[in-house]
Figure 1 (cartoon, rainbow, N blue to C red):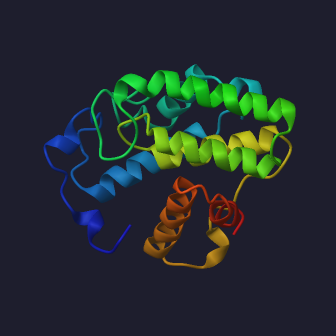
Figure 2: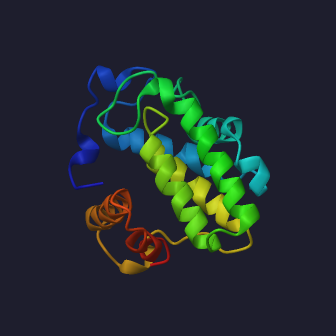
Length: 190
């Protein structure tokens, strides 16, 4: 989080669906979300067949953000500047999980690439109002582990400031949007 951003007050729109009444700034919100995510990660990691289910993905989002947002685990119903139309989300997520299951069964790609493509498509769908990147990274890590490899490092070894790390991640996602998956594959293990 850039310096100063933690002190930025939340707008009235930002309070829509917010559960804790003490949250007044972006820093408060980030801290509350992080505590909720840490609790969610204490759950038993899923098997691949459990993870590749749209209900599980909604439940995971709810576990990660349900103590902070009343809408956690529910597909968004509003248009956003990224992601697909809300009416298409449920079908797109089911199509994604079906594709990934087929790729796993047929060994279409190496495990890392399957998990990275899963993450990329899930984030591109942008199924939830907020938390899509964090949710997608956890889901991809769970998939990688369920398929027998280590969770990703997501750039932790690059020794970059948070803002630079975020820019590197977004750049790798944008390359994947253009069909170039290699930068995202490199980033997740860096």
